Image 1 (cartoon, rainbow, N blue to C red):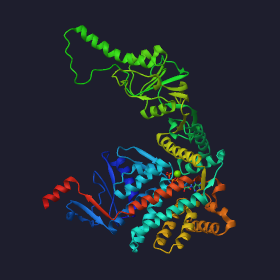
Image 2: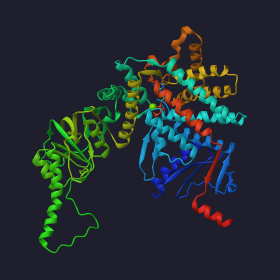
Image 3: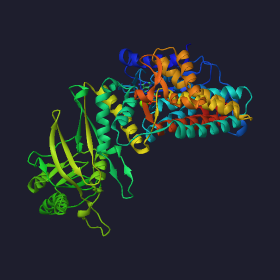
Image 4: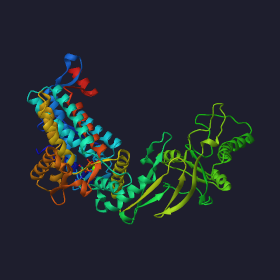
Length: 606
Ligand SMILES: Nc1ncnc2c1ncn2[C@@H]1O[C@H](COP(=O)(O)OP(=O)(O)OP(=O)(O)O)[C@@H](O)[C@H]1O
Ligand SMILES: [Mg+2]
């Protein structure tokens, strides 16, 4: 059997192969990571690759506790957890950095995703091991909080764990390691913020563009990174807003990304206004209304039907006609209330029937049906509208208050890439923009979307924190040298943990250079030497920005080369990776309750 990494890839390939060549009936596959050395066990519901010969688990039933299940404790569980995290890290390792490769993931219904984004890869893998799950969840938090750096978090956390496990094997108590790691984390964050971070001039667009370029350098669109970086920076600057407390905010969610097939990636463009991917509900409606008063509804504007189960006995056929009339009138009254309040643009997440459309056409209003709820929420936020799910008020009457309406300077229908879209321009609360992406196929468009999302988040963070650090392993090497020195100043047990913490960071420059097919040993040694000089000699401080140039395979000043990242992103990477490692390291007992059928079998045995 090969290494865990090989197994994982052979598994992904097998899944793909079987789906395309053998059978299309696989339901769901899961990744089970268990006991070393044959530590990775895959199974599908077909049972094709179930490895029956893995070593017998050292678990025993926790009968003493009155629980039917498996229990593992001490070194066993620690090693098992570390191996699981290592396996997850090995999956994403080869996608780190500007020359990292992509992964092809096939899900249970055969949908293919091609991506380089760590967060997406981890989301698509159905990791079953509890410790590996912790790691995946922490990477997700990084994705939510910062938007970029998920791959780095996983790789650093797995390395921290591996080294901690070695220390435990050498009889250092996990508590000492944990306190050493915590101390080192605090020192590392402080060092990044105080010594390595550099203030950038807010108005200098160049530094923002460089941050965006570094973020997308590892993605599919790296070839056109100049073009896309400009697009991203323009988009983020366009949505700048100040809230009531005077804080400047960049709400990334007001940037709507629309994907349109055809043309090439470079034909993508930025559009002022929030674009909805649907057209007007009827041709008779105007193409443009200005100024627009927008009603955001979350219910049907169709002929109301009697509730299920309601029985009405009618003796006179005329009464029946009245019921029908009333059913139609209920919707008509609702529409009239909305129009009376002054609305001339009506957006609903549900349907509008032909009869109702007539009223909107007559009133010269634009009505749009089947708008995505998420879109509507963003529109409501941007225009100051209230998303209404019912007209009922406290008295049981149906009313529509004009204050529920949102405002935009203009709402127009435009044709973009042969599709009709509704554009809301000059929104009241926050300005909104849309990025129209063009690309050959869905895979490409989706990956472009993910790459742009990372870059948008990074630009936002740079604008908010205004501090940047050099990328390409510069921060990691500086921290490694600094913490190693710091470790020697401690005369306690924590010294060893801090030294290992320092060493763990070197995994990033190592993986970056291995992925770029360069000599990692030599490059990393050079890098450390530069940083050692920078920290030892006061007149050589500029060397602290030395990082890897992966195209030439040498060490260069990455701040000058424009490979920069927001300092906040690095600090979060350090914090989340340490948190993940500590959470997993603290576990020394794992009790797994047996599944129902296993439990009944065992009860019968006893
Ligand atoms: N031009 C470059 N030269 C050298 N290193 C670079 C360059 N561009 C990016 N890097 C480095 O690559 C790393 C980021 O790689 P990548 O974007 O693949 O992973 P991530 O940001 O950790 O995760 P993800 O983007 O998947 O969420 C950072 O350490 C960064 O410093
Ligand atoms: Mg990235």
